[in-house]
Image (cartoon, rainbow, N blue to C red; front, side, top):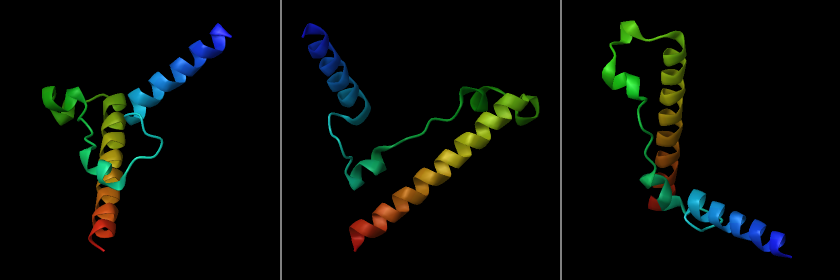
Length: 80
C-alpha cells in the first residue's frame, strides 16, 4: 500500500514539474516557451564548431522554427 502511495506521489510531482500541474496546456502557454541557444554558440566562432556542435545547432534551429510556427498558428487561432 505504501508503495502505491509513493508511486502516485512521484507521478504527481512529475506532472507538476513537467506541465505546471495541468494535464493539457492552454494555447496561450505556447507564447511562454523559450528555447535556449546552445552555450557554444556564444563562446566559439562558427569555424571552430565540432560536427557534434553543428548537429546540436541544427537541432536547435529546427526546434526554434517549429515553436515559432506553433506560436503563429496559435496566434491566428486566438485572433479568430
